[in-house]
Length: 294
Image (cartoon, rainbow, N blue to C red; front, side, top):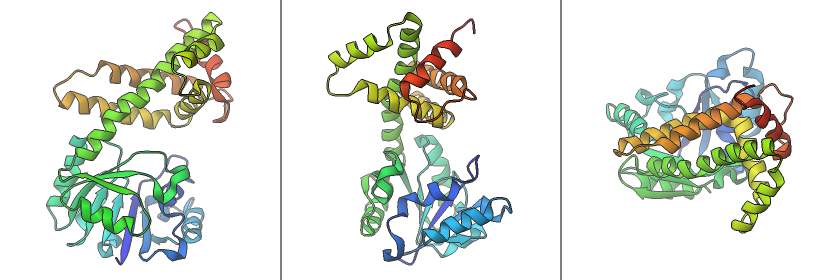
């Protein structure tokens, strides 16, 4: 394999764009058999370019000045829908890792089909840290088995789940209903418990009913995700709801989770909170700011 190229849109705060894009490859270093390159719009932004290029150099990743540079790649990992589909080389594989539903993946697949490359869709099934290149990724498409074998040989952790694009993203979107549904339930239940003055008793009761998990740790984790990544999680849950509706089913729980997570994320902004405050820091703010009379 000659080259792997990662395409990434800029983050809102700028500094995280390249590091999040290539965290998957952070353990490869000089041992990787393939050349690693990345394209980010902020490589050409004078305000951000220096720091981003330095981070790329630190991780052994070549920054591309133009998206057309992906034409030399054997494998393109896309984290932005439709970013550079027309520039994919004839024998290259375009792997769409965006957290979107199967219908959205189909749009990217259609764009690739107009050229000569091959489309494989992927679903990242866990947070990248602490797994880095070992983060579990499901892939689907005609060349999914081949892609999994090639990238797993470089130390990644891909599993082919089918030959039809949409199978991997459907799995992830349906899973999101469960995962972010729990997040929304915690927001509503703990905010109510705080207003009633029974937060710890509620957690004790849930712990007794579901003893396999430490529910205080669970609350810490999910509320920190709402605080830090709420907007992105709402976008993913919107895609999840649309996925369910595409199967001819109603998605009231998913739509309600979107609304709950969005409201909680907004309520925690600009309140002097940090991601490490845990439920004991987040819940009082939610109980106060989510109140209908606030």
